[in-house]
Image (cartoon, rainbow, N blue to C red):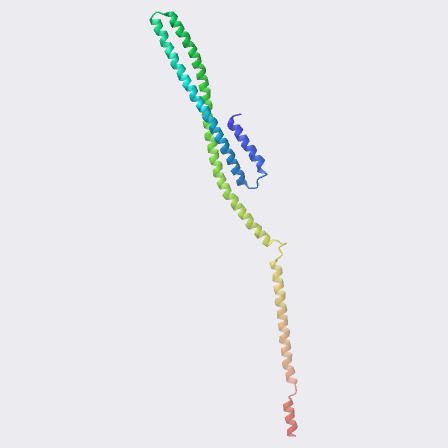
Length: 216
């Protein structure tokens, strides 16, 4: 398992462990971004160390190749001078240097492949962080809208619920009963006034009666 696979699994594990504990998903995304940034910085440090190792091996390899070329020239020079013994000694040094160069070449190739893989994974992780950060901003806006909508719906539901202490229908019935009572009282008052008028007609005019007595 590569370093980035382990990083990904660690991040997923933290996300899964926090999923049920964190009510706000935006906070969860913020935590995920912090974890990703931390792992990215660690990966950058590891990559820098590996790249430094690649350059170090490359320098040693170049030095070994140059040394081999020098021994090759010495072999040719010794042979041109007729000194086979010296040529043989120079050749032995060249063979030893070539083995060293071959080992360094293998190390360089492996380190280069690893470094290239790390750089590619770093770019991929950086892109994922960018996408996650962009999604975090979108999710924050959506979550805020959802919360606001939920609060509005809760208020509306509370207004419309049957358990609400203030019922519009009940108030309307009370008002109608009050209006009917007032109307009934008004009709009774009018009836009393009507009867009073007739009673006045039946009342004896004392002044008129007294005048009649005087005329007699």
